[in-house]
Image (cartoon, rainbow, N blue to C red; front, side, top):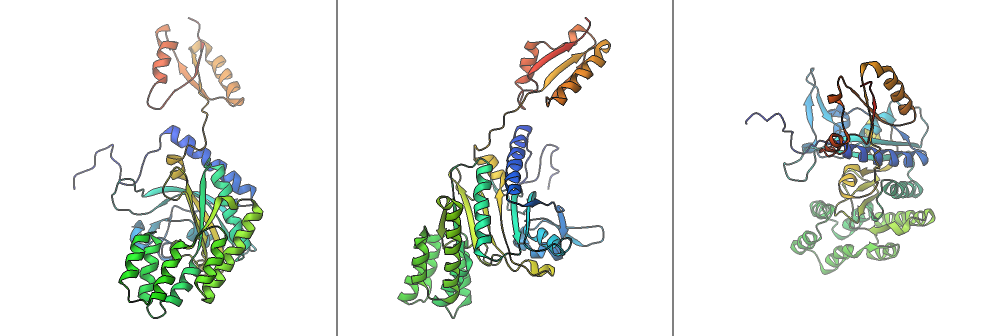
Length: 400
């Protein structure tokens, strides 16, 4: 393999220029302020964790983890999600903290990808975890907060789809009781939202007409609260029934929050069925065809760190919002350029301090001769550079 050029970077990572960083930070601050107003305290965890703890506990498949060895030969990983590191902290540093615990975060996470256009190996998430409450009220809280967080991020038109892994597990156990392999195949296809592939898979299976009708019926279970009644009629399995009842309670709470108009029930959506244990959800912005928000219940994670507790949460895909949604408009205040000579340096520095105390941004330029002074014409040329305007006003403190 040839040596990379100095300006090249690895596939899946990117540079964020100043205007993008300004907007990303504005989104981050607005969303974290929203989460704080709901009682969630911000946490930061290391970028690097042990593979044998956080790595194996994460929701990310092993082949998508970035692994490396430290100087002792121990396998490490770059964090691939936030629930696993937070579970480690809740089970150790916060083990004396009474439940429930509400935490928020903003972090970059890493997932190995195939080298395809548009795929990202490093991206940003802003989210929350609610640990220690297994009630429908807790699930409704994180969904309602997801709605508020999307609005805080500047996403105005969106829809959140609610599902429940228990419903599909129960339905499949009832319809295909004797083949776990078939059940896993069908869930895998649904997880990728490949409805054509789901029907094709059903057509190849040795199913009775009743079984096939029951399994095809799940594709129609998308809509409002009425979907819960339809789902109860489709499957009599106790797990499926309990899961639908739970979703109905979540929906009722969301109506009382006043956010049900942003939500729909989609029982074809199960998320990562090996990780989530209950309700799951995804949020879609009108401008984009892929999720800008995802979350759900994962009650088995914390027991891997020695503190069994239910948990639910979500994350916003912050860089997707940055790239694909007009959202928050950042009004940049251009710096003032102060030009000064040696005789007027103290005066210029004093004026710069005064302006900065007022919240203004100030650039300084020392000049020796009149030829060094920037004119408005020259300044206009500088302002039109690739990074946008460098300054908006020129003030000169010179003796010549």
